[in-house]
Length: 394
Ligand SMILES: [Zn+2]
Image (tube, rainbow, N blue to C red; front, side, top):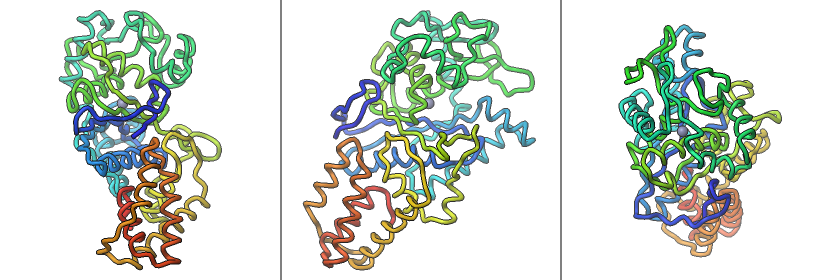
């Protein structure tokens, strides 16, 4: 199977080292409800996982929940809720939305606040190895200690320090923090601010930085080296770039992940769908008007790496495809046993080509229309088997 590796910017043969495929996907920060951009990422990885299992692999899947960070603290103050109450409420909503879309739950759904001890161990190790420093009860990763820093950034076109710094600043970096030796150094442990939750550490009470959380959880639950690390394309830099640096310098083993897969951004009204812009299509609202299968199909009609915008006509088109599959189900019944080798091999060719779900959906749609015209029960049974590989519940 070929997958596009962001790190090498090329399609590579994905060959598991053993029968277990270890996948880590960066999860949500639970302070607001699930939008279509989240759904695109998690349905895309769900489809990949289902396909790998269909291929006969065992998949071990870990996802994190960033249940403490600046946004949660800010939002909980706005709402007058305890930070952990907000996190718990929004995590429950996220899982309910994902369950509705038939997204398989991860084997481990790891919370940052439950990983503090492991995070402290790794941060301590980075200090001992000369890659991090303590200043004013905070710990920072030292970019200058790491000549390799930015391999992932360079692969996505951020070719020099200034290019990296400009994007980092857009994505939450504080370049003028006087405690940092270099504007691009990033926080591994931040000292407690007045009134904020904190955990004990060798550097005083505080909380972990975001990047280190994912390294710690990935290593804890999947080992020091994994097969696939994924997330939205806006995570490639700085988040995943920082994860690679700190993980590989802590373990002394490279690569931290053999493949890096990134999903395209979803747009609305010409802008990236984001909480900060408020241009959100919420999954819970879409589910009032469309079935889970329709939403999955509209997501799968877009290749996972491509940015796209969702228009009402697309949802109506997807609803029509799902109706066609339902008619095939009505034709062949629940216990259909037939097979169609040609259809199966064409489906496989699409999916093995960097998970080309748009081609797979088109293939199944045309096959379904043909089946309804010809009453070919063998093809009908095969279509329904393959829709279930895509996670549809026809
Ligand atoms: Zn992450």
